[in-house]
Length: 258
Ligand SMILES: O=C(CO)COP(=O)(O)O
Image (cartoon, helix red, strand yellow):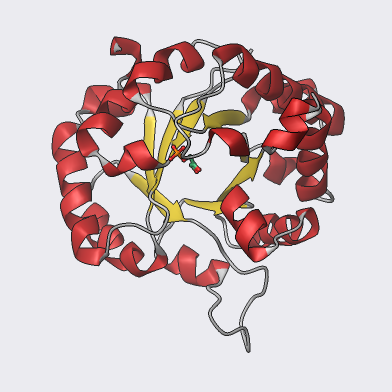
């Protein structure tokens, strides 16, 4: 089976201006050592307005922290007021871009079809999408979390060739566990992450499925990360609130010590 390097990514959401971003990444870089980077890939997803500052810092000091955006446009360029293109993100050396975060789906009406277009836009520009999927509370209560989440995976990956899908990151984020302090149990996380890997094997093949990293997200903290990471199909965490606290995020990166 392929060994998958865990990916710990901090989704800052709409927090930290560009000056705060510089201070935050400097503090993070100061705390992390080569030993951390050997064991785990560390990434931050700041707001668009911070990306140039983060790039300058990462390039200037040759930091091993990766970075990316929280969204991108499905379009290439032109009259799309307020949108930011994949080409613009690639120009800033972004590695990652989140696609289909539940807050985009909920507040901006993003559909699986749009997510599919955004995943393809990311690959056109050499960006790795972090495709976010997961169910709301009603779906969870009905016990439909697996079919619901797999339908989102199917929709977002439709027509995405294996050479691209082999590098996708999928973040399973149950909406009821985001920002609520209500963390899914490790077994809940494994159930859906395992099912996602199974679906990737059906859509592509087992070898590809074994390479893809599947993250869990939703109220991840230093205190619960180790149990979640101990699950066989969980390869990292997409961390919201706790990523805004550098010390806490560093403890999450060092999940093996918790
Ligand atoms: O939405 C999330 C990450 O994308 C999770 O947010 P919290 O870690 O704040 O629950």
